[in-house]
Image (cartoon, rainbow, N blue to C red; front, side, top):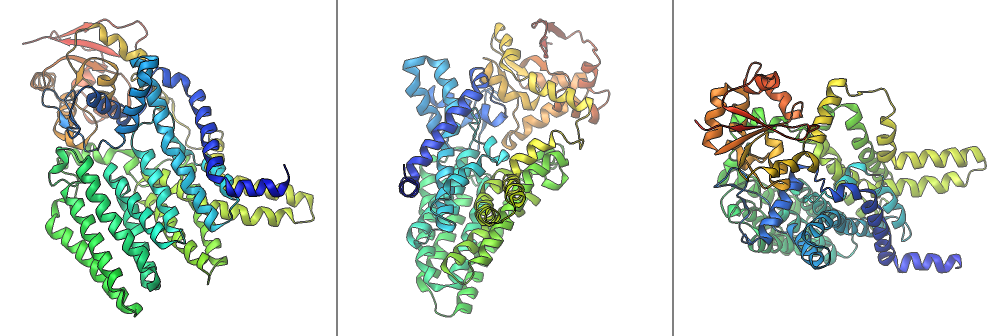
Length: 593
């Protein structure tokens, strides 16, 4: 094929070629993670809870009933999610079940489902770099996305939680912000934000940043009124439709942790005010600025006055729960408090992306492309700065850094290749590749650097935390009749996923009372534990020695019930139950009074 024909095909057929690349990536990851898929290695508590949500729905639980009845039975507790992400998982199970059976269908669905939104992320980033850099830049965007280690973790087989879909909507948001067509771009940003919010509130800061950026574009250039107005309509209407179709019974209350009437009213109000501003569209820039500030003040002050309960910690989270649980969640802490070997691989890619976006914006200043780059620069910078708030912003910050990193490579590599010195051409190009792919290379290099290496104690804790939730370790519990097991909070979702038993608690703030009960039971006296277990109807006790959560009870309450168990103290009301010889778990029957 001639070079001219090849370049035309790369430009003309970029969507089809991008999807082919996605399919190849998906097949590779499925092959690479096949053992984990086969053993249903849902590594995060949220992944296990997502599967339980799908199972309950397919088993006859109502569309709007997202209460998990196998945690803290018999009443259970509400999950603050929606059914949106359940749909592809359930669809794959129903599609595959007639051909491979129920277990294999579920196993394959959990492997395939997380890879579906990766295709959207690839297309969103591809559209962005084609508009901002070159029609031929999209393959480099795919390559650099594969260097975003934190982002890719959200798309790995078995990662069936909702973050991959929210990142996909974020990729569409940045594509909409860079779209030269106002109506299409505004609609994409509005609908992407609405879908993301209907899934969960994790991306609320990004939705707010995107809306603010569109308002700033309109303030600067009143010709942007059309983009702003269609965005406002899609945000308000999309949020309303998302609430009507997917909000659970539990989210019909005035709660602050999901798209409830609280945030629905905010989105509708924001959409109405922005639409009114765009419709009025005064000619004077200072008037537009004043009106935008007034609209923002109405939203913020009105929210504070009407929903003051949403200005602090989540509902059902007492001060004690905030101190002893919420504040201990590592991903909710700023990136700079994490060890260097954790923080550096996550943070370096966003820094490179911001630098690349700054250079690209400067080079295109004074043009329509410069305005588009400025929009993306604001969005990427906002995403990077969110790392200073919570480390969980890492996957989004890395993904949004891709356009800036592509722009940097697109500028530097041709320049270096034009140099006379072979040394400059070779070493310079290698240096640029290492720079723009810094997220991947930093993660690989950090393994060999003698920095923050885990201690022997940490290695023991990591091994226990990895081995106890496995199917191999938990499946033997099924030899005992189904009952309620008292165990660690972080083991609860995995217990109900792998076994037929119920559990007392899971790491979700709406389950706050049960979380505190578990903490009090393990930290207090043996008599206190027995009373709490009886109140929850628990008839078995399961622990994982040296699991991360267990270390908290030993440190906080030396001499407490769990500390006594760890020192092998026996109690006449606890009957040891046999497990396989090499099991990392310990199990007892709790004798009745």
